[in-house]
Length: 241
Ligand code: BTN
Image (cartoon, rainbow, N blue to C red; front, side, top):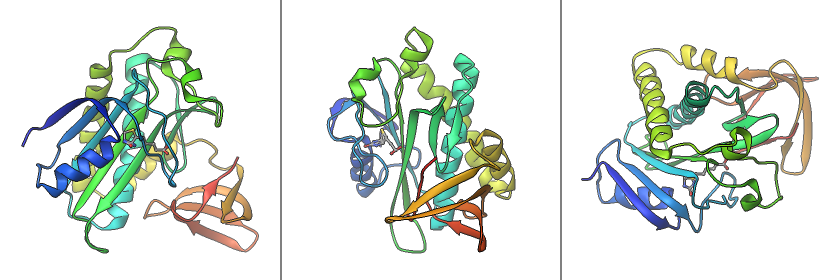
């Protein structure tokens, strides 16, 4: 199949990537859209995707476990941070699990969706959204988000940004294949926001407090609570502060 599909307008690049995956497309297939009408965020949220942003999904057939799929989404956040550092020298950080943030304002998000059986993930759809060349007003004011254009005052070439992210992502994926998770965990931690600080998380309508200790071997959040160290998966809790 075609390795890069560039679309003018799609409901969601993740949905299109899933469709291509079902049709048996190649590992590494990339789907791009200039804008999305039904962009999807984590936790069933909507993701505003006007023209000027980088809306990209990658079809990965890693034949890995769910935990490995989580590691790949962590690798994607590291790749986005490193690409932005290299291209525009912007010191962005990662808010667990994989929000890319500058000064508390979200610039990019990652949505990993798995297609396959419960224990062996046949395909991972890795969606990456970056707010690039548009005013932040286009995002509404429902949450704290910003665009690179607002921060930099100039536009970035979307193709160059995509290539840069993919370059770093490929490096991380190769090292994940060959080495232990330890190296990625280290890199992720170096870029993480709030390590060692007190945080609050939401589980349903329950609020839990603790010290953010890092990520565990499967990518879940490690919290030092009054009842000892506990870990929480990204699907289970939301990080508050
Ligand atoms: C989040 O932080 O909630 C994740 C946002 C992920 C958005 C990207 S844009 C490309 C891909 N297609 C989608 O519909 N969502 C992801």
